[in-house]
Length: 346
View 1 (spheres, rainbow, N blue to C red):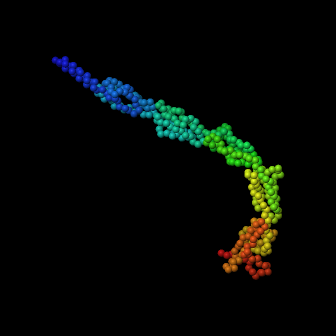
View 2 (cartoon, rainbow, N blue to C red):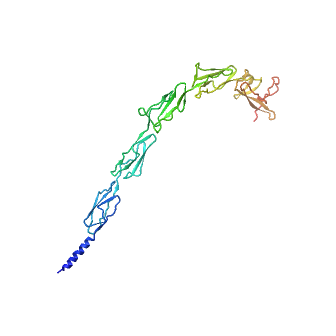
View 3 (cartoon, rainbow, N blue to C red):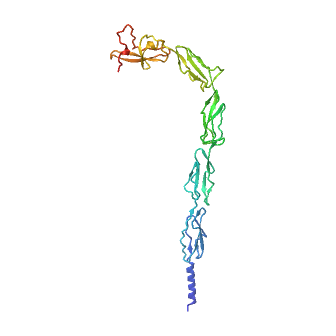
């Protein structure tokens, strides 16, 4: 027969043994929550694991009951970040990102000539959506080009209705009598405005003066303006030094001031010279004199080496210097050899 005292002691010890098998605080899992969270649990108490907002598991929530052994079952729950839709391409722009997972942020930039219509950055939310919504890169436009006073548009074609796109150009032209100061072509910039517009100013030139021994013709007007022209000419035996036609420039001056240069009378009656690479008789080719600017080469003798060489002479406004080495022979000195017939010096 079992003693009542023994039974009472056994029950007490059994109760103590069962009460001592409590479960400890559950393990922490990355990005997971435990409800309820306590330092210890009695056998039979239940806990629930769930992923934090922005994270999810393939198996959903996990429930565990504290067993009599006091050891929690193995928990294989993994909470992974939500992934937002792919946003790595932005038309006419670029997207800077590392990943598209919560809670990462991506940023946007547009190419030159486009502007960001929307936010500059977006964040992947707990629900796996981008916030704010993704932007677009819209083209930069310029209003119709400004036309300065005394100017007209020579070349312009808008790309979008009445507006222009980045790098579109417009060409300006000044009205007659006006000169342009600045670039005639303006361009739509990446900032939505046009490059610097030129200025058109009325320009007058003084009446051209008549050159000595010559004449000048110009329009019979009360005044001469930008782009007006004048033509010059010279009297007989004189040569025009400069262009035949000149133009009134944007600074109020003529493009040139031609003058008339005198021809040269030759004191030499007989000589063979080089003219434009050929041997000619000076007295035949230039019997009426040599015009300003014309050049010939005289033959001279090197008596020591018994050979010939040439020296140049040019008519400059009525004056020509004959080389001192040249010797003109009389027609009576038939026995003398002309320098042009002597072999050239090496």
